[in-house]
Length: 473
Ligand code: ADP
Image (cartoon, rainbow, N blue to C red; front, side, top):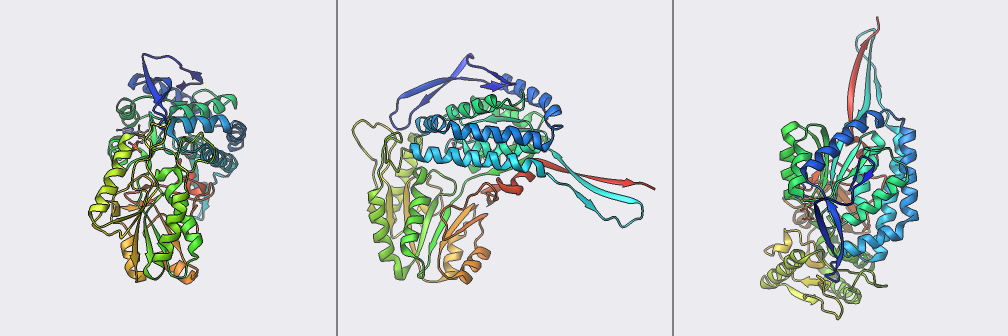
């Protein structure tokens, strides 16, 4: 752990890290509980007095140096990710570059936390809005993007002038530790960014009940997000939540089929489907369904599954056994309801691997009675539905609970605008399987969350607006 500028390497409790590709022990790390969490909050509160009064330019310089160090050490950071959560090493390196990009972008944006001057309707009055940091911020992050989820929260928080306590997922603290080494090396003042590792049941309640924590930012499951929102209501913390999703992927008859296949592959099988914006449902126009499915199946069959440290691996293991069981359950249920497995459909056995692998899978004849049609699978399984009518498919694509990301493939841009307006999602990719950028807002509607990360919108989550009315008569 990293508390108040000091490394804490031995405590009464430890957490064991297991490599999901091999089942092997990787390392043990020191873990804290309620007491350490409280100490960390106190340190962050103390540091806030100093950090909020630094200039944006100075805060930005630290962030830019952290970004530089992350790029310099990307191999070390990426190896920690692959060993603790399984994603292919090349993808882990890309994650580091994305994480560094957010850090650099907010390092620049720190200078631009502007306020407003508002014309008054009474003579002699002067109306102003100043934007100030919210205060001590708690950030709870998941295992699927163990580095970029940290910087997407920490970078805007630090840029705005907040101090931060990060609680990473218990299964992925090693990459968080590597990120904090960059913070330390960049000379970030003590108490400004802190890392607490340990069980959620002990750390979570202190973070939510402690009134000195003024902001909670979370990425994870919808159920835990709801719980944290309820707990944060006790002392009315500002919250932002990036929760579950159930992304539809619409392919119209005029789409470039090869591009659509490429997009489906990227949005479903990257990170073994363990991404909140992963495609969960493909809807393809009936007239092109056969050719689309044939091309898709061919490409999926070519994906190389294996240990992420091996060269050329496209799909790594699932994070743990429960994740694998959920995938198996969804596939069995889809078959029971008339689904036809075109490729995959089983666990993946290979000598030397004892991890939680599942074959990349495509299921045809998907229909709304299957669990996979409404529940988040978080695994490498792609059900394909067909449609004949645009309005009908939009209605089917809109989910009653989730609204994070949706993808559409069409060459008709008037249709593109119609889809943009009618799809009830926070992020829409039109002929674009990667609708994510440091300068753009990422976030969902409905039970997919509140608030945005990235861009100037992401900074808003860490500032309060203070209205000042001044009479200067
Ligand atoms: P997943 O199912 O993807 O693991 P979770 O929502 O369970 O997602 O976990 C995301 C993060 O939330 C992790 O850091 C986890 O430790 C943390 N977490 C889970 N339950 C709680 C809780 N009750 N209070 C605080 N943090 C929690």
